[in-house]
Image (cartoon, rainbow, N blue to C red; front, top):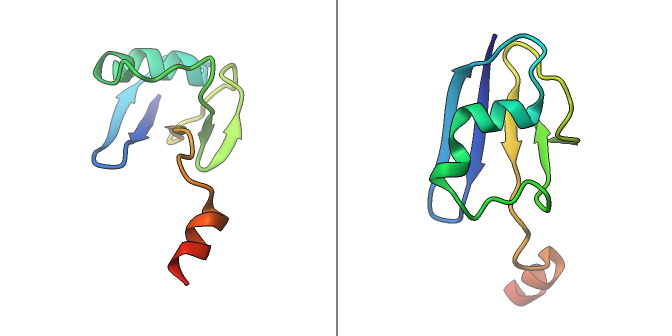
Length: 86
């Protein structure tokens, strides 16, 4: 089945489509994508992942056409940033 895997840093983004076996999990899709070799700073034990913007556990089964997303840590509090703009 065909799924996408996405990861973005502040200055570069990765989005790739790949074929994964039926009944693959989020974790399996990420491992098969090779994104962990391209971005060794990704730590799946601490970073959140999801499908189409909804945070999901690594053992969630993906479906045809899903977009698996690896989220990075927030580096600034959005409320603080908003106050600085005023």
